[in-house]
Amino acid sequence: MRKIVAAIISITVFVILTYFFITSSAPINYTTGGQYINPITHEHSNQSVPQQYLKDSKKDTGASNVVTAIVVEYRGFDTLGEVTVLFTAATGIALLLDELKRRNVPHDEPNFIVKVGSIVVLPFIVVVGTYIFIHGHLTPGGGFPGGAVIASGFLLLLLVHTNRGLPERKLSVTESIAGMTYALIGLLGLVFAHEFLENYLPLGTFTYLFSAGIIPLIYIAIGFKVGSELGGILHNLKGVHEE
Amino acid sequence: MMIFTVISWILAVLVIAPAIYAVESKDLLSAAIAAGFADLAAAILFLVLQAPDVAITQAAIGAGITLAVFVYAIRRTERWEK
Image 1 (cartoon, each protein chain N blue to C red):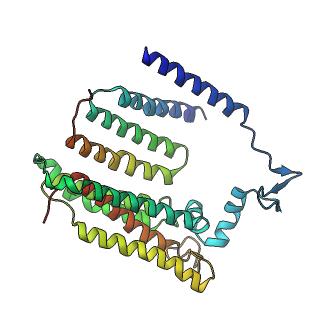
Image 2 (image 1 turned 30 degrees about the vertical axis):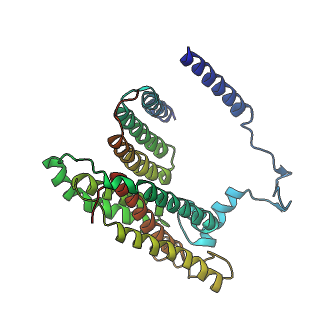
Image 3 (image 1 turned 90 degrees about the vertical axis):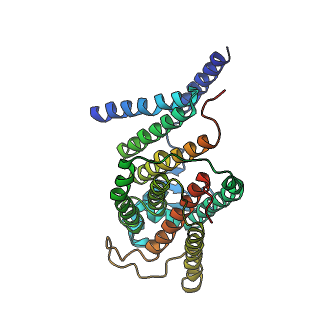
């Protein structure tokens, strides 16, 4: 009986949402006579926001990946907030699960294939992760995916070495230094370019590795930070007591 | 265009079917693995929809790290749902 009611409710919600999606598929009309209007300041322009990003991001930021240009340059302050959210989550997990480390659960030994395979695969995982966050301004990817790939390398280490954890202290030092680097780059923007997280380095040649000003520096800091944070989360969840 | 539609439908089924199994299953370990499979199919779907940035993140976090987090949590608690 409960399942039938749940099915009826979910189908009803699906139908209603689909109906609204179909009927309101025409874009909201902020335009009058070919002009786009900013709904807050009522300024006029002949470009919508996506058009402006696609057209100006090369000139403004020098990054060939427009997603990165938006995430790090135009919306850099939001990214700082996201990093802070992840930091808070990791700290909360470390606080809550500290108790677990005193109650060790016995682990089974992994088999031979996993042990030898990890030696072969681990360097490639780390190199791919590093590549993803160093080339964040040129190719798809960036600090968050690269850090997550490196953390999955940490996960492989945790799965293979069943009775050991990760070096917690080194991870937290790396994380703190990376986070401070991000904030410091932003504050230097306040000194040299009169705005927080504003670009103050030369843009360089488009599509080259050393280009796009502060974007690669910020993404390297984020890559280190996310990798060490997710590694710390996995270490705490595994809960190995190590002195 | 035709191939794109067919691939999208296949991937949609591959996302939705494991998700329903993950909700309904009483075995939490297989539910976690089904959720990881749904995440992996979603990553491929993002790649087909030309969002490689999101696809990389989804594959690394959804199919890799979240699954490990669930498995570690199940190891600490119980495998079977009451």
